[in-house]
Length: 258
Image 1 (cartoon, rainbow, N blue to C red):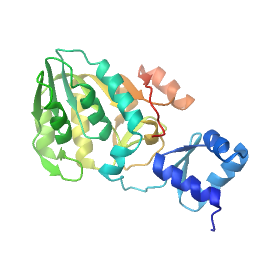
Image 2: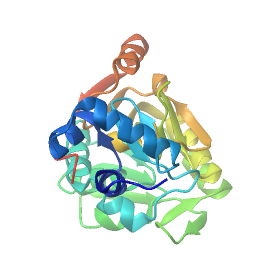
Image 3: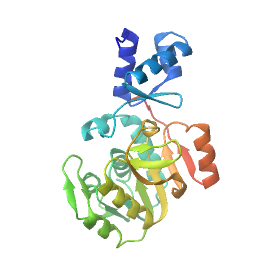
């Protein structure tokens, strides 16, 4: 199908920002909500976007974005999420951080914490926290994933299983509307599951662009998370499920459209 100028711009916005919202697009293009919904329907039929609650996300199939693209995406929102999560971590505590650009934002916000022990399978997290003299860092072994500095595989899982920590802080590549956390790499998923098992409290850090995105491997349910740090409200049905599960959803400031 031939796209209109507006529809082409909507696709570019979705790819740049990770998600577009009907209300925002209607204001941006000075058209009705019905017109935007029709545009998104046409784009979904063309295989360019997937419809999600309140808007659409770019269709990426089963392939994750590259690390540098993910690091730049929603950087202000990730910084706000990282700061809020770090504020919930007291000094004199132990924690495990897994892979992801948002967990790296948490690490950056932990730079001034005192007497903390951090276990990680993320070399970027280790390098960030090396600047904190009050942080003991323990890095998992395993197969190095050069694309993002991750250490994955059975060795990484076995390493994580040697610890019992105060907090697990994980990210995910996608979040299904039923509350399942999803990822693209089964080896990474196994490590994330081990991290959740070895912690007294579990935190998820994830911006709004992950909601409704598709990925093939299931990590766990939000029912297994104590606090979910994110930047925009969840759809009402998922908020109700979180309330039933006892999962706190903490909204963090920041410009989610960065």
